[in-house]
Length: 100
Image (cartoon, rainbow, N blue to C red; front, side, top):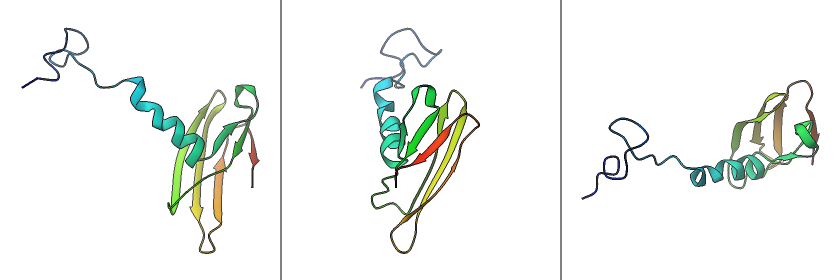
């Protein structure tokens, strides 16, 4: 039986020499931000973002999106009629464009 931390090299952390934290496993974060939260960069430097959420079967989704100007806070909630209500709080220097 393999010891995933002890058998694969002598780097990383003392007694935990193998890390399972790799860039390939973070790819879903970008997809969730772009597709589900609906964040699209419209202008260089994130000076303008378009917000077009795709909730699928979710009732609500909430997240943040980092920009050079600060963090954008986003929350989408499905209304009873099926439409989506969005609250977007962006820092100064970031214009929010609604795609709907």
